[in-house]
Length: 370
Ligand code: GDP
Ligand code: MG
Image 1: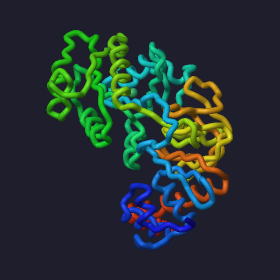
Image 2 (image 1 turned 135 degrees about the vertical axis):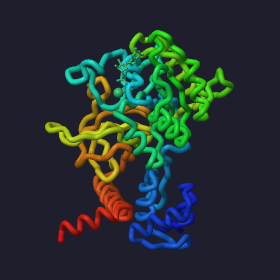
Image 3 (image 1 turned 90 degrees about the vertical axis):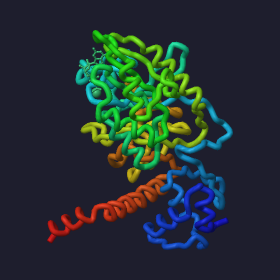
């Protein structure tokens, strides 16, 4: 059908009708649940709710889900996406480096390893694990705010000698709110007098019960600098990953999220994209938040040029018209016209949201203009 009622559209997306009505109002198409809207409007709504649209024919669209259950037939195993969180100086960077088997901490500026905000390791039994190493928790928080939890597993690093600190608590709260399983890595176990039991006890206060305390949270004692406990940590990540049964369809237009983005003097806007489902290919036309572009080239975490990126793979993408934001959804679309339309529409919605949220700023702006 060319037209669809608002409630039917909401139904197909498994969204609340009231949320769809609110979005339509913002779009300048005030509608009630029983009203019919045309296909173009419906597609904009779908895209805005983070659904990938594939035109099956002129009169029908297939609706995909971002971050939800992938209903495709061709599901294949995908690597887990892991974020390391914890208080400052508890050893997040050191642990990421130890797991990667390099030392980016000391030679960050002149190092040969490409920094794209995420990397993959290959375990001894040939499984891949994707680690996000974006500075701080910003990307994670930004993505959470949009309801897209990019992370499958959180590794909470706690230095045994420092104990539970404010950012440890914050990380626990974020992780719980996102409903993401957590593995506790008790770090700095190489230091004299190491006492991991103290940490396990202290965690109980924050409702984190590790297995030895009768709970279900896995924990592991590590030393990022002495490189002990790393294999056990990897084993626990893989175990958790198996429980989660992480799967995605690689045979469809790519969807994903922006992990980080920047403006490079020579190359222009660059974005590191984590592919969530489908395969991202050079030549693909995409929308990232309210920016769009065509994949001119892609670089992997080792600095190698690649032509395609499978689910859970991080790649740096060249070919954007502007710099998107961390957390922005990435959607491959069928044409430049469509990309431009979605990007412009989103820019409008984003502006509308800003105006709603920041009346004070707007007033300040007007007073400056006056
Ligand atoms: P981040 O702020 O959480 O990223 O922490 P860093 O990785 O930058 O580490 C902070 C400090 O703790 C650095 O001086 C590290 O060398 C040190 N550190 C990290 N892990 C360990 C460890 O396992 N043992 C010891 N003794 N020191 C560590
Ligand atoms: Mg650090």
